[in-house]
Amino acid sequence: MKKIIASVILLSLVSQVLISQTSADALRYSRLFYNGTARFQGMAGAFGAVGADFSVLATNPGGIGMFKSTEFTITPDLWVANSSASYNNVTSSDNTVSFALGNIGIVFTVNPYSKDKTGSIRNFNIGFGMNRENDFNTRVFMKGPNNQNSLMTNFTNVLNNYPGGISQDMINTIYPFDIGPAYDANLIYYDAQKKQYLSDAPNGGVNQQETVSTSGSINEFDVSIGGNYNDKLYFGATIGIPVIKYYERSSYIETRVDTAIHHFRSLKYDQYLQTDGTGINLKVGVIYRPVTWIRIGVAIHTPTYFGNMKDKWNSNMSSEFYDSTRWNSSIGSPLGEYNYEMTTPFRAIGSLAFTIGHFGLISAEYEYVNYNQARFYSGDTSSFTDVNSQIKSSYTSPVNVRVGTEWRIQNLRLRAGFGYYGSPYKSGINNHEQYVISGGLGYRAKHYFVDAGYSWSQMKEDYYLYDPNLVNPSHNTWNNNSISLTLGIRL
View 1 (cartoon, rainbow, N blue to C red):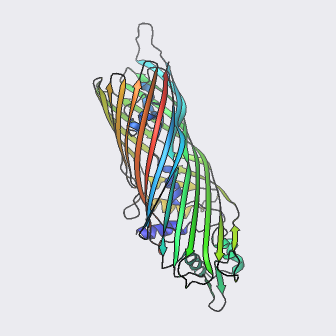
View 2 (view 1 turned 180 degrees about the horizontal axis):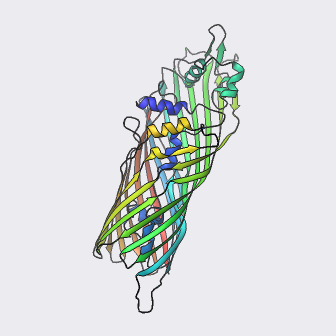
């Protein structure tokens, strides 16, 4: 089952003139790992029933009602991503470092109390700013021998099994981003006697390596309003405007090691993808305190609608040969562009927090999201029928939980947290679970505060260099480290 689903996804990557979207793209933009302030990060994001932190505008807007004064925060982040890969019994590693802005925002408090402090509405709050919802900065390096086939075996299989056959002058028209450049770079040729497309290393005998680098983020600009009813019920709503910036570069290299292979020496296949999009959603939430030491939070997020998604992509194929019977070449593809629309799934978050006097608190929350609800759309209603079917059949609703705690020692704060994001795949397809362990500390004074947070996360996933029916997966592990520093001012 795992290989069948992976085959469908990978084969959909064989270049097309117009559409490049896959079910993996839908998951990438639907699966959120909220960043935000250092306090939020130090408690693993378990803030749905805690409130009074700018990050909750993106998770449970009811938390805005708990602010008692005007507050400004800014959070720079240091992101260190380490990866390891095991492909055909060869282990390799890589890492990348990046800087980002996890949060910047301000909440204004309006106190409508009469002079004698009567009335049920204790305060109204308005907030706006930015919270980081996802970070795409990673790099993974995979390498190992292959004694069964090569990338060109995959390409010749596609050509030889093309319904009704495919002529040589049509290869670039139908496959302008991968097989076409490979054909022009002399890595594929047509044997008129066998009436087949062939390559020099159909049975392997090559070393393979690939580096995949991604960067970018989902930053959401939040505008929120909320209030405090009688210090019992805190309510709020957020209009979220998430902005997607995603960049992916991959470089695949294949080198001959079997001297029985004639002509072919090496190839290099570079690919580049850029995705941009802006969306909109609505979040509403409440926090209720039945007694002073218990807080119950509930939040609902509408699906996010991205009406202006745009992909740009291109590739380059280079070849080297041992003799002059074939020319060394470097062939670039055209630039592919496509505009489309996307919706990501509905979300619901339930949370619970217990305060222990003035000493500390413990909080937990559960997030419901069904990733098979994501959808792509375009003017041609049939364009995304297949990929939307893949989304529906591949993904499910996992268990997503976050737990955090904070303890006071006079003006100091000590924090810790744990998060678990279950596999979004249906049974037997892939892993992709993510574990989060976090901690932090802070100093709180009357008119300012400083918080530091650290978060470690791990995720595993199988990656196929090309057709899963031909190659073994590379077993990849990502260990991400995030360090945040929040500076805050209260007025």
